[in-house]
Length: 244
Image (cartoon, rainbow, N blue to C red):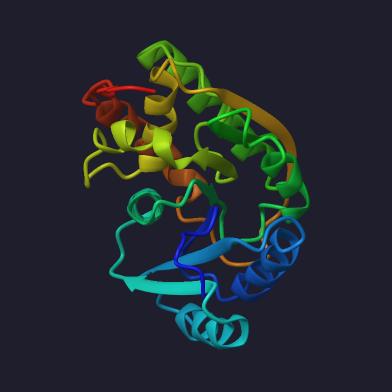
């Protein structure tokens, strides 16, 4: 077995997704194997209370060591993502792809991200078509303009769960995001945008309807969460960029 790290870590934060987790993992394994054999699939179970953990353990037995399953107490989606990014840094894995476990991230677009990895440091999926309802489209637009007017940064879709990142550009931004930041994935998008040396790109995607389960943040809670997010963003310090 090679001692060198794989070239890609696929980060899958998971919480109560027993209705979708098997299909998501299998379809992503099949697609990514078409483009690279050098990957590890890291599923971080964020304290699921349904049958998700049992299904992940079965999948691990089926798929072997390339599927790694980690259990943790519930810390929230954003902080779970940060744990995955830090894992990629610690292992020296050059790229990390974040996706969601509900089936909305369609693997058919993966090759478009992967073939452009040498040109850019951060590639986001741009949700030009969405099956999850107009209210969530509006919420994403509100977030985009809120970040622009309050923080002066333009993020194409700061909360999109479909993103490919070059690991070496992450540490400076990650160091600024505390353990209490609930939408840490949004904070990371903001901080990466503040690093002028980071090359950004976006790729249009179709965002599917969920395979099952419920969103982590219901629509009726978006208003309160938006206020909390702005308050947390105001406390963020700019990344300490020590070199490109």
